[in-house]
Amino acid sequence: MNESIAISASNLTKKFDDFTAVNDVSFKIFEGEIVGILGPNGAGKTTTLRLLTGVYKLEEGEKIEIFNENLKDNQINCKIKFGIVPEISNAYSDFTVLENLEFSGKMYGLSKEEIKNRSKILLERFELLDKLNAKTKTLSKGLKQRANLCLALLHEPPILILDEPTSGLDPISVKIMRKQILEFRKAGKTILITTHDIKEAQTICDRILIMNKGKIIADANPDTLRRDFKSISTIIFKTEKELDSKLMNYPTLIKRSDGTFAISSENVLKDLSELYNSFTLKNQIQISDVKIQETSLEEVFIDLIKNDSTKKKGVKND
Ligand code: ATP
Image (cartoon, rainbow, N blue to C red):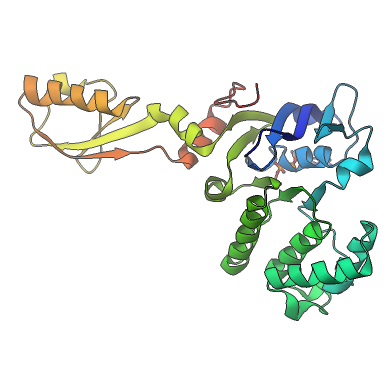
């Protein structure tokens, strides 16, 4: 991955009357990255994408640069760099799949030959060739979303922006969409994706921006996020006999309903060694069946949203 900046967004803010949907958000996305914006309903993900893609006008003090070009000054040059799959499809429902591709291709100034050749390749890749002449409104949700991605890719943009692209799709469509998103990335392109799906973010994203109440509250790769939260890793173990009150007061110790014990740990090796010293060496209580439960990204996400401070973790951009 090189370090040239595909998208630079500074101080994005969007108000709807008195309500602030996006609150002074800044981030950078490097060329070749897949970045996920992850957040609960109403966090401001779609509004952020709409600001980025020029749907909402930028106010004084807000700035977006696409490959170093200012969006305000170079709307067309910047917008042509995006392939966009919006939350609500922008395909014409009464047009066939091919007619939509032809229409979109003409809007981007492609020749008839280019439209024909690229459409064929895309429809093959997305397993849609047999739907070429089907009206878009007759397609299932999954097929429609695959057609939307074909439309977004037709003008061969360097940046793909996807608003919850796999939400509500069947597993086959999800698989095809993810495969094609990863292919696009393999070709060195940049992807910004919003999702509710933590597993999706974990599987395909290089970096995750967690958004809540209009703010980015974490900016890190999935592993960094997990490492930052190692304090909530858990050591689970059994003991050969009951613990007296002194050991029951061991820091962070919890007796679980299945009779096993758990302690929270920031440093698993150090804490295991201390456990062994306190329990086995000093008090002759053997511990067994030790398991380490790693913090999942889901726990990190829930923890961040629950304790929503505006402090960023693992920030790459600052
Ligand atoms: P979801 O995951 O549910 O799509 P989101 O993170 O994409 O949510 P947004 O759609 O950006 O969230 O909405 C952020 C907040 O702004 C929400 O409270 C929403 O109700 C509000 N909002 C969005 N668009 C408008 C609008 N046009 N008028 C008024 N409020 C709006």
